[in-house]
Length: 450
Image (tube, rainbow, N blue to C red; front, side, top):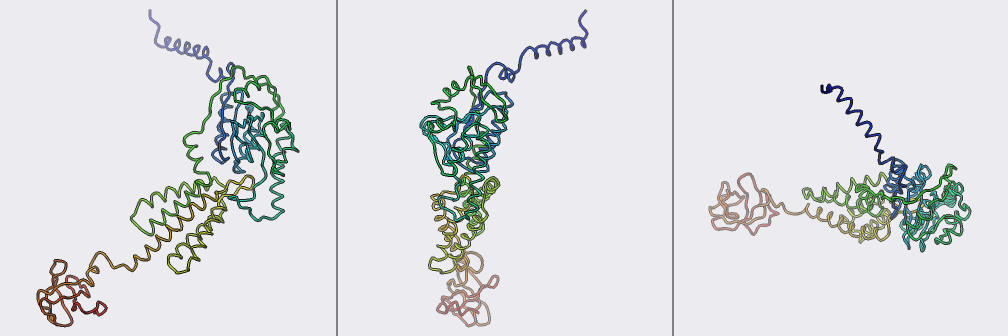
């Protein structure tokens, strides 16, 4: 007798459950059998999107029970807030983190120095350097006048931040602080000899070989022995969205978006109906607002850019012999240099970009405003007012108290005048009233219209 349907159903579920138990999951395999090394990359300036990327990479490593996270780094520095977030994520990571300054010729400067020394394993390739982490109290390469007390506060805060993790990592905190207080930089070998880093390796594979079997001490004091035999390396790359956003939040790109957005909207307001500048300007303005939300933007920089725009408009309207133009250029340059502030690592708009954007913006703004002002005195190109001042010929005499007929632009118009005008006389239109025109002999000036 065949099995009842209900019994067959129960048997099928039991077999499926046994099959699931017999096949270990990929996550369990990664945890138990094959050591997994998740590769992250910090390339370029440290900014908010990169901090989010590192956070997501460390979370992914924890989810997949990775043995090690390897962050390959080549950076000139970046924003202090983003740097502190990355350091916090590394210190809190349940998976050991190795930061590796590579390839040859790379650097882990300024903000990168803090990230390097915060790792469980700090490593560098030959011919690389790190350090030079003094707080930069300047934007765009120009030193800002600043109170000495505030300078000491910023420097002392950076030193304390560095000490807070270098001591527990077993590194040399006194020497590490010289990169902050004296802007000292170190080659790979110098950093190794000074016990600022743990390993010098030519390639990532060589680094993993040197770390295999090494016992490291985590930030919480626990000891972990790294088993990297036949480790599987897998890259954790920036998503397409993160790559796009990473470009937007670069100070130079943010400044360019802000100016293009302003110029596009300004063009649309002064020349309604052009459409394209308004659409482009609106998109760039929204992207600039997004970047402004993430970047440490100085409102004084925004105010200076608005002042510059106002001065360019006034230059187009009044004769100032270039004084307003020069003031606008200076205001915009200062606005660009003050736009993004980062006391720890700099990261402002570069002077070259500031100049390259300011000068065309000034020229275009003045040209647009002068076009608007000139259009106010132009003769109307459409409608009845277009006919005023036009010359026609009388084809039926115009009496002093009645109507005649004139030919104007190939059309026949009823005409009246304050004095009689005979046939064949050339006349000039001085007024339009509905479907008839008032005329005067052509030798009369249009200023005599009634």
